Length: 284
Length: 352
Image 1 (cartoon, rainbow over the protein chains, first blue to last red):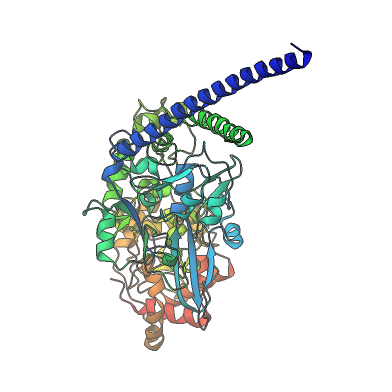
Image 2 (cartoon, rainbow over the protein chains, first blue to last red):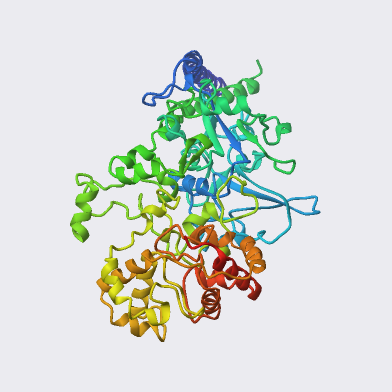
């Protein structure tokens, strides 16, 4: 055997070993891939089957049996802002004039004006009138003005049937529950605020302390215990109505039966579930 | 297959497997349970404790307040009005604290400052505002509020007086019958003392000088308040302060009882002025009655009163020589003509 031949043989045996190693690695990876992949697929298939019937473990509550909706009768609202303060107290919303899950707008048409003057409780003049960023009231700036028409409109998350905010969330932190409520899982929210941008109604607020987006939950912790959302609970004039559309006797079913309702910005295709009575062309 | 393609494919497979394996281990078990989100978060959000706990919860300890609210204008479900406890008082939260809970409200009141305090000082406790801020959140007259909402123009309603001076927030409609009970006095004993008053106010309470007030038929409660105010100096008056200083509380009650039961005489005034005055008297009617007979015994009746005395009184409120939380601000809205016409109207209304 020449030296040349030896070299070739050594090279050859090396090649054989390397090929064997690579082949084994390939087979191993394929097996692992199949195992993980099939595991995932099976899990997903199972979850798709059971998701329809399964429900989160909430005591005495089955989300398959409810379809929540909200009504606002702007003709009844007196602008007392009890709902705004109640929401903050119930849900621990940041106590300042910049973070709200629900708010109230005032629309004032002065005589001869085409467009409405709009302000909300977080307006600087109203904050000055209340003297605090933790308590809210509307100042009486129009008391001597010639008013054509004026009214208050409570606003909150519309809990849309096709929520744009859920569609854009990159992590699955925000989602729609089976009973029609749009929630945020703060442990999965990365604070990118795509949802804040996507919401056509501007209802999402950003918690700068926790670095997560926050929003109205229709007080999910209350409605799943048979209570009304805090804003509905404290509304002294029934301007806010809440209930289960699956129950024909519920306040919201009666509200929808007895009134001609509208929704905000129907053209966006979000299909809101907050229904308004007595709002005007400029309310959006 | 060419070697370089096989290697590339192998690399893709290795990376994909690593990624899938990592996802399998790092994704929460409940993630796809109901959809593209962490299924457990639904129950987590639903498990929060409510802070607003409703009227029935408050009722268990505060039954008296609850009962008076139940029948009041703040609870009219028929017209969709529910001013529940927590609308004004704020969320109950963890009130009462575990330390308070075994004791009833009455027991805690009896203990005074030794009573255990609430877990969170503000929970369910209404910090009573020193001004009218609480009530005016709903009741200040404001464009945009529906007409059905009860509203008051602040500048024209009760001056700077607190709302609670006349209204019980649990049952805000004024109940004049229970508002102020006139102290019981002996009219016969009062008649003896009244001889001193006769020089100015007439033997039967019909004043001899139109600048001085008739007392006959006036509410006893008001007469008592006025005499006590002269006596204590809160209502300074050159003549009356000295007169009242010599009267005991019983004397005051007796004199008041005597004059309130005496038959009155209507002063009378120019009918043309009185007619004009009647149209302006609507804002006085709430406290002084539509015909000048006040619904509360604590407030003065104006019917049949001397017009000169009434206008002097209004002027003294206007120039500040006399002060009253309600009347001072109301008097300042009246012109000289208003005063003349209003006093003429009340002077001509029948005192009984």
